[in-house]
Amino acid sequence: MTDTISFKLNDKPVRLKVDGNRPLLWVLRTDLGLTGTKYGCGEGHCGCCTVLLNQRATRSCLLKIKDVQNKELVTIEGLAGNGKLHPVQRAFMEHDGMQCGYCTPGMILTAVSLLKFNPQPTEQQISRGLEQNFCRCGAHVRIVQAVRQAAAEMKGAQ
Image (cartoon, rainbow, N blue to C red):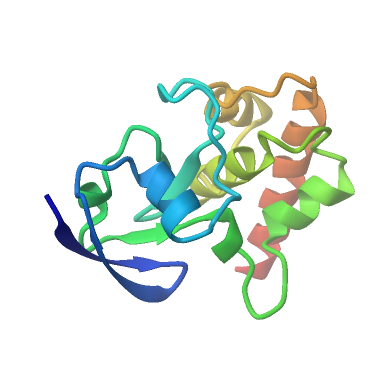
């Protein structure tokens, strides 16, 4: 069955005619060509498919496209603004918070959501906030450092 789904994607209105029961992950990757959102486990455990839904980190493999009706969605492709990387993106680069890069989009978006709702987290809160995003390369120490730097930078910009 085809549904008309309207939502805001990376600050732009989108209207799609699709099967409303299709996973959001596959609509993003195949229909919209936004391949920064990765397929990992397909069961919501690894975090590779994380997007921001109304500013909250959400696993796109678990959502149906109809679940984003009239909501705001941000993918890694939409995080930078006005030609500038988001502070979390910059901090990941500066701290080498990535190795293979597969988990990076989900880690970054999870960190952005964490900082939105807890602008000055402790190191322990950062670790807990990211523990459901798996990095098999072992970059967690550098990732936590990057999020701490981004939090400090974002605090200074407020």
